[in-house]
Length: 234
Image 1 (cartoon, rainbow, N blue to C red):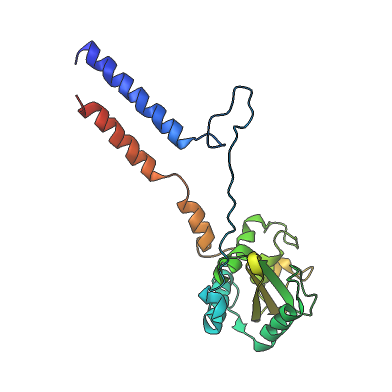
Image 2 (image 1 turned 120 degrees about the vertical axis):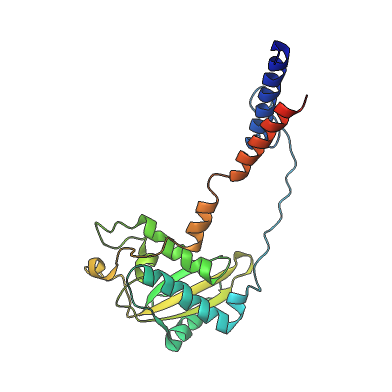
């Protein structure tokens, strides 16, 4: 290989890397900023996101009940708790609370049961995953109640045997899910014995999705193909 050929290949390689960097790190405003650092003029079009009003897990009673039980018991099993059964009395209480809440206020009912609430999830399983994923913030070395982990601790509370849920579509805000639990959890002084460490499983669906969204293998493939094209093209 002559010096001229080597210089040409090096220049092509540097050019290819520069293009990759530009594509992988675009300007945050969608265009180059002006010399004084201000944002360039642009037009913005805002489109309201589609509301998942016909999600099967919310609109079909059988699928709704199944999704609640299956997703709840996955987390309970992972933390050494027995599976819960579906309780019609708890479900009626949740549905009644949602029916009285004409403004869709995102707030707890203040009823006699343990209670978890969620709003705007893609489906029932996503709501339960949201609660269960709070375990990443729970300190098992110092068991106790926290607003940041209270949904999780109720979800896997060992003494809880029954669950019942209601749901309501709240316009553009999506579905409002309320689940009641009995016996209720989050009792001060009992967290150490009632909230077990994770003994099986690798995480929720959302945990797995976050793992899949890690390093993108496609970029490695693009890099290899790009360098091969540089070396092979005369």
